[in-house]
Every structure is written in structure tokens, then in C-alpha cells.
Length: 115
Image: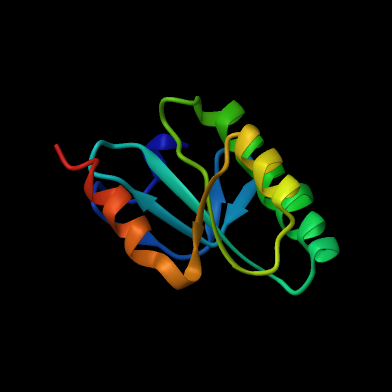
């Protein structure tokens, strides 16, 4: 639940977010929203279907349904090969994407939530 998330400005390792789905990392952003982060590595476009479409994007949808769009920002941090079509589909399903080789963008995004 929202109330079981880390304190504002804090994070934790793998845990259940919402009713049933685990996230690799959970951040409580400065504005109070929860950011469940999935870390995904893919070595081919075909493999990216499993990693992104069938796993991370499904979790994003569940977290949004469980906690509400205004309370959660589902994120995937990606490394490797991902098909463009699958990246777009994941974003359309509510997943925000960052690349592992450019984590400063994720840090900057979180910083913008500071009130």
C-alpha cells in the first residue's frame, strides 16, 4: 500500500508494491509518490518481449490499478537490446523508461519532485 512504502526521500530493495507484484527497488519520491523500479536486461529484441512487455509493463499496469495513477510512477531501468515497438508499447501502458547507462536522468527526474 501507499502507507507501507519507504519514507519520503528514501528507497528500499525488492518488495511487494500494491496487492501482489514485487519491484526490484522502491523509491518514495519527494512529492510522496511511489516509484517501483524494475531492472531489465535483454540480449535480443525477441528477449525484450518477455522482459519488458510480459513482465515490467504488466507490473506497471497492476501498480497503477492498485495504487492509482496519481500515487505511483512505475519505472524500468533498461540495459541491452530492446525493440522500439516494445518500448513504445510499454510506455503506452504507463511504464516510464530510463537507460542504465544514463542513470543521471533518473536522478534528475526524482530531484524534480522535491517540493
